[in-house]
Each structure stands twice: as C-alpha cells, then as structure tokens.
Amino acid sequence: MVDVLLGLQWGDEGKGKIVDFFAKDYDVIARFQGGPNAGHTLYVNDKKVVLHQIPSGVFHKGVLNLIGNGVVLDPVVLRREMETVNSFGVDLKQNLFISERTHLILPTHRALDKAAELSKGNQKIGSTLKGISPAYMDKTGRNGLRVGDLLDKSFTTSYIKLRLKHQKLLDNYNFHEDITAWEEEFFEAVEILKGLNIVNGEYFINKQIKAGKKVLAEGAQGSMLDIDFGTFPYVTSSNTISAGVSNGLGIAPQYIKDVIGVTKAYCTRVGSGPFPTELENETGEELRKIGNEFGATTGRPRRCGWIDLVALKYACMINGVTKIVMTKADVLDAFKELEVCTAYKINGKETDEVPFQMEKQKPEPVYKKFAGWNCATDAAKLYNKLPESMKEYVQFINQYLGVTINYISNGPGREQIIEIN
Image 1 (cartoon, rainbow, N blue to C red):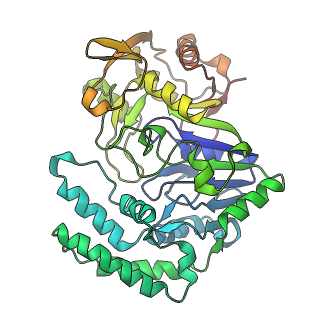
Image 2 (image 1 turned 60 degrees about the horizontal axis):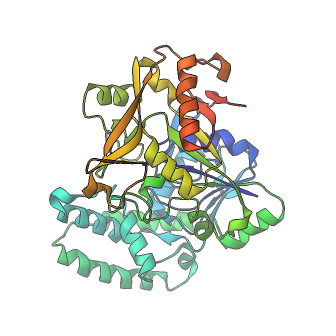
Image 3 (image 1 turned 180 degrees about the horizontal axis):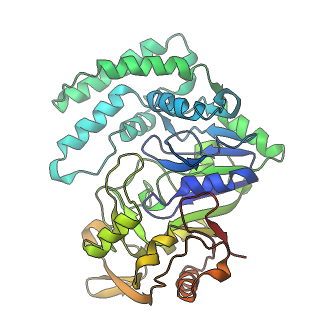
C-alpha cells in the first residue's frame, strides 16, 4: 500500500514536518520528483534541519528512505546533507537508497541555469539556480547522466562529452564564469555517492509493497508548480502532483491509496509568477513576519496572501486528495479579520475555475470575510479546545473543497499537530 503526501499550493506548505510526523507509521519514505530546489524543514532534538534531497523519514529508526528515479540529484548538495544527518548519529548506509535511474545534476547544469535566468532580464522565472531545469531538459532530451552511470568505467568520458555540449550553449549565452571549483567539488562528492546503496529503484519499491510494507511517497514543491497543471511558465520542471508518483518511482497506480494534501491556513509563493490573493500591504508583511516566511532553500522572502480556495479546490481535484493537513494555523492567531478567496473575477465575470493562462488573464480574487479568533492556539492539543471562529473557518473550507481537513498544525514542533476525528 502506498500513500502520497504532497503540497497543494506553490510549495513551502510545511511538508517536511508533516512527513516527519507520519513517518513512524510507514516502513519506507520515497521522494518521487524534484531536486535540491526543495527544502523540507524538520526539528530534530529541537534543532532545525533542512533536507533538500534526502527523504524526511531519515531520522526515524527502522524506516527506509528512497530517492526515486523522478528526482534530479546533485551529489554536492547530497554530501552536505549527509554530513548534517550523520551529525545526529544516523547511519545513511543503513537507511538511504538511491535509484540507479535518478538523473544527476552536473556543474554545467547549474551554470546553464544561471546563464538562462540572467538572459531573461525582467522576465525572470525565479529559478533557484540549482540546475534543475537543465538537468530535466537533458533527461527529456536523452542526454542526461544517471546515478547508475557512476558505476561504469566510461563515466568520465560521458561526462566530458556532455560538458562540451553544455559549453557550446554557455558560449551562446556569452557566459564565461569559471566553474573549475564546482567540478572539483562534484567529483569529490561523486566518490561518496558511489559508496551509498545504489539500487534498481522500481524493483526495490515494488518488493517492499509486495511484502506488505507501508510506503509514503513524499512530494516536493507544490501542485500549482506542476509542469503541466501549474501556473506555466512560472512552474518547476517536474510533475509535482500525485500522478508523478507512478513514473517517479515505478509504482502502478492501483497501489496508491490515500493522497494527503498539505496547505497553509493562508497562502505564500516564492519567486515570480501569478498569485491572485497576494497582499502587498501591511497585512502581507505581518503574515510574513509572524510566519517567518523565508525560503528554506533560497532564504528569499515569500510573497504572502489569504488562502485561495479556487486554486486549492483545483489542486484537490487533479491530485485526488483524500485527506488535508492545514499548517501554520497559529500564524492567523493575531488577525482580527480574515479573508478567503472563493472565486475569481476575469473580465468582469466570476468563475470558480483556474484559468489556462493566469499570468495574462489576471484574475481578481472575490473574498468572503471571517472573524478572526484573535487568541493564541499554539498550545491546543484537541480540536474541541480551538476557538469557535477557527472551527468555522475550517468547516467552511471543508464544505467548499468537498475534502476534509483531518489535521491542523499549530506550531513548528513535532507535537504541535491536532488530529480531527
């Protein structure tokens, strides 16, 4: 049996803590897409840890963790993460496995990412400059190098061949930054990667399923950044939705049971792109300050706004969401009045559908106002102890979405999650 846990907004929904919370109930945690552009924040022994590529179940004894073939892997970032995880006494040679079909991010992918973003001028996508897009482009262009290739004697030859191709592209961008140090770091990290458990990922995961093990597929970024269904072109380079689990891990669809969607009690976005409910005012600044809304990977300040139920219902639909976790509900404690986007207005007409080209059609949010609870909720352990106005907020969202919020996270701590029966 496989459950899926993924983000329903533009990423940064707090998935790391939620995977960490659920990990004890699973035997395997598997990442199925994305790369080091993701940042999942955990608190281990009261210390903040940000994982970019290693699955968030790594701190749970007896839980196996798989980096799937749908991921693009940077060995340099992985090496840094390994050092952090090892400092907590975790033996990654025992509980971390990497699919041999996982594509590698090369130093020239990072250079190409930077060169392409610089060339866009004012039309920047908001790339994290981690080499994600060029790595996925090489994958679809059938040029990429994979983790399994590291075990082949001809890897260096293949690397040089691809590097020369990349260099021609960099010359076209007039990009001449010296990346020698990046390459030295890369090949040092590759040697460490070769010493890890490199497995045939699809056989590995299916053997676990056939043995009756419980698998949690961990998504990165968010549904509104999906390459097909997100706010294109301001999206990531992979399928972030539940359908990505099948091709990102080699799991047949019939094995997928619950799809657990994670949303904040409000909304944020990092980088460029449409964001209908964005608040470019004091309220937005207050959300950012109270919620500590700065990117786990980039450190960039996140754009903040009210919850967008049009986009959220769309995300629930395309993912087949069966359960919802609402995070950062306590951030709204300070507000006397809240607003919820229930429709878009486009060219004077109201709609409850996400348009084809949000950037050009510029939907205006139609809001419903709610009274805030204006009191601290971070100490609450039970749903019936929450303020009535907070329950009304939750119940309205449930009714609108047609999917139930089953958990509310009311603080960063592992224990700060309220289960709603």
